[in-house]
Amino acid sequence: MVSRVPQRLESFGDILTPEEASEPILAAPVRAALMEWLEEIWAKDELEAVGLKPRRRAIFTGIPGTGKTTLAHHLAARLGLPMLLVRPEQFLSEYVGASARAIGQLFQCVQAQETPVFLFFDEFDSMAAKRMTGGKNQVAEQDHNHQINTLLKSLDTLDTFAVAATNFGDRIDEAVWRRFEIQIDLAAPGDAERRRILERYFAPFMLPRFALDELSEAMATATPALMRQFCEHIKRQIIVGPKANWDMRREAVLVRVLETVKPHPDAGLPRLWSRKLDDRACAALPWPLQKNLDAYPEPSAPAADASGVVTDFKPRGR
Ligand SMILES: Nc1ncnc2c1ncn2[C@@H]1O[C@H](COP(=O)(O)OP(=O)(O)OP(=O)(O)O)[C@@H](O)[C@H]1O
Ligand SMILES: [Mg+2]
Image (cartoon, rainbow, N blue to C red; front, side, top):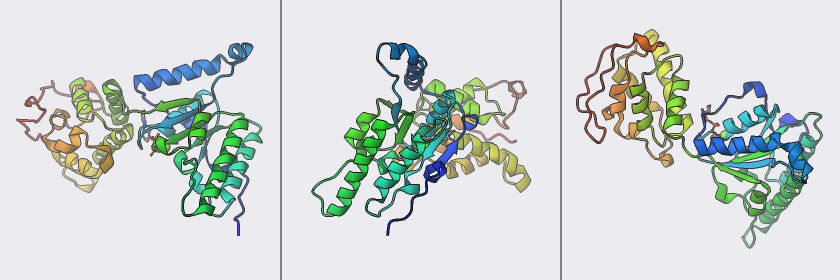
């Protein structure tokens, strides 16, 4: 029996309003690609005068936590549009024909909206995986291929902005990929962006420049999501720890934070997570954290050997 697919926009995912969006801190190439696209959209009339249209579809690739959803939401907000965050697992089904039908209904539903909606396909590889032939399960293959054909047709008639995100660009069907005219790879943030990300997520606490530099360097290759988790968990410790009578010395807090906030095993270890307390960034973290830079005593950089291993690491009290 084929399950009934509901028709409301909310049945296909979450609707995120422009007001809920936050501005991502982007690496220079990503920022440049985004600005180029926005300029193109704002030049719609001029482009149409010469028979061109601004591009309206992009695919964002990148490992989890690099900010694909955040960037799409920010873009939708800059265009003043609500974003439908399509969750394929919410409406795709293993019943023969059901997924293709649901995809058709999703696009119909989007086209029928009075005000335009910015479409964002999360985990797009689960919806648009390459077509298959010659396998053992012919019924499943045919069903999947039918789903991709429906998706292609739907994309060809879609009259709104659409962004797809995936951690596995190589799994996307090539014809579907071609329908997305812009491909942006969200690489890990650079040094300057990491400092700004740390500043944003440590706020209202402030870090002196040398501490930001050290932490940023020790977190090279970390995703913005991991950096956010790290900063927020330190702040959480600062608030909850004294109430719960935890050891609030800097080293004790850092041990607890580094033990529970960790990169995914496949993502590779940023230096801070491989050296932990031995990393000079830990000794550079002024403690306790202050909300005003003037409240810190004069900085004294910790001694470290050339490889970044701290040689005079002395715990300071609260
Ligand atoms: N460039 C950025 N600047 C500031 N914060 C960011 C940035 N990128 C991501 N974040 C933060 O990291 C968290 C994860 O981001 P997001 O969900 O956008 O990543 P994603 O690439 O969509 O991950 P997934 O592949 O798991 O869906 C969010 O809380 C977001 O606020
Ligand atoms: Mg996401």
